[in-house]
Image 1 (cartoon, one colour):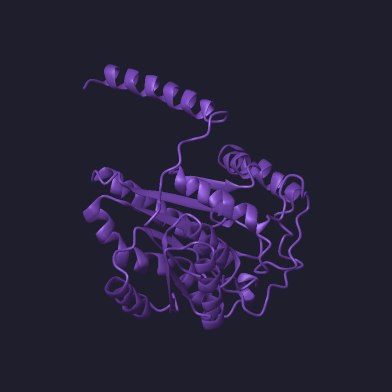
Image 2 (cartoon, one colour):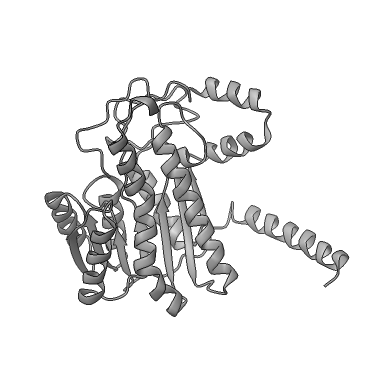
Length: 306
């Protein structure tokens, strides 16, 4: 195809894709049926991991729940079972340990079968300035928030590719799109998680495996306790998010094969502006929105793993 014809094709398709997006502002997208799918959720012992398990359960799925907290994951399993899951399996797994991820993954394959929806949700935060953060905590942040995604993909993606069917869900963060003062290690881990998920998604498309979908979730602070103490300067523009609302939006994104989900919706504008504004104006906007002081009142919780 020559340059002229290919350019015309790109222009016409671009117009159509924009029209299609505009239509879907008023007409809901069709939701897929995931009844009977095997859904694995890491970090399922609390927070949005637990809430996602309950929502997926209500859709008639088989749930596989991972967490490092034995009591927490058992309680989530109980709640999911009572919420309509076909079956619930729960396992102790430290996602920061590659060998343990592979070991538990093999156990899941033997006892449950192939995972068709993988939700990488486990995450931790140190809440310390970069210079003050111990090396061990920085390493742990990268291991849980980033490297665990590599190992779970390695374990479960081959079966999805073989079947050309599946869904990879990465619970990242708006801190994976925009740097935040006081969250250097966390931002690095989430930027990496976003880049990894997006790149693997492109690999799948390039090899014709368009039946394996990707959803990358980038929320602002969620009121789960993980970021207790953090305050938002303008709650009308950037509110601390209600976890039930976030989970509803995540489920909708998965069911409609939405690739990127940013929450709140103002994050789409803010992330876009970051890439087009002059640096000084971007910094001015960051100060205005309070990005320089978000972590000043951070307390967190004793157990900072979601």
